[in-house]
Picture 1: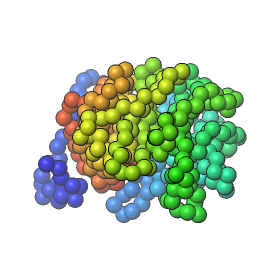
Picture 2: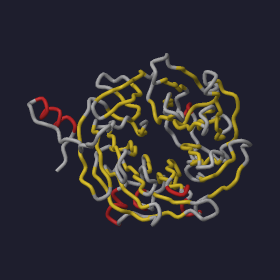
Picture 3: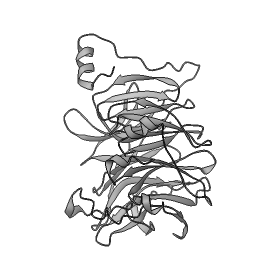
Picture 4: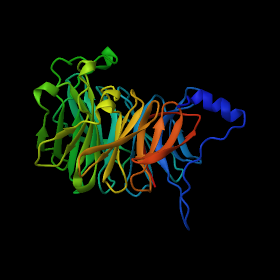
Length: 364
């Protein structure tokens, strides 16, 4: 039986206890610290560092946030605006003032970014919407996040990006959907959209590999990425074709190979509602979680075996981050839940006063 957030809050007010999260005992244990965007009970948008015991740091945002990027070394984190927002903010953990930055006038963020391996540069996915061209903006993290360059994403609607272990190769999930701020949330090219998974040399901007799905799946928008063991790229998709099609939504790829799209168990595949909202690898890189907020499920996948392992139920659950434990994740929900779970383990839940947004990261 599932409980909605309001019902549980009423129960707590009457003295009922929330289910406890697992105890991670041991000398010198430090609780995990995460970061995510969210909305509070007054309707204010925020991004925050937090543990399961409460906030460590929070900053109010001028609009809805999306993903968080952590600077190597952990001394600073960056929150990005959700499409079609133009703001970003870098927040030092030592209490210094946040550094705000914005896209060019004719651009907006898609909500994702990644730092260079040395932490000196910040790469972000952007839309040059007048030219319907995807771009990767390059900002100087040592100089107030001033934009110092850019290079093509080699596809339309670059959503998520990540760096491989060499620190030089970027993988880009190009969703393939054309949008324009003047048209709101309208998707303007569904009949001929062309998603792609591409690899780019970040030092030159050169295209190294491009992979497109078979023509029958040209409406399978490639959206989010996780880097698993041995640089295996796991990608989550959102289908823009007929709802009854229910195609596979989780893909695996290693450079030089052909992408493999894998189905969940038949009943679960239909229950995903054609929408994966986030993907994250566990601390070992051997297990990936993929959320399906429209279906109310978080699925788990074996990276090496490229197979479905099982699922946890979570209403409007989307944000995912690894914990310190193998095969274990933090799951966040737009209904306020904070959950720790993994394949084959019972979910432990607590409720918060926040509506958590689509993504979360482990900070330490």
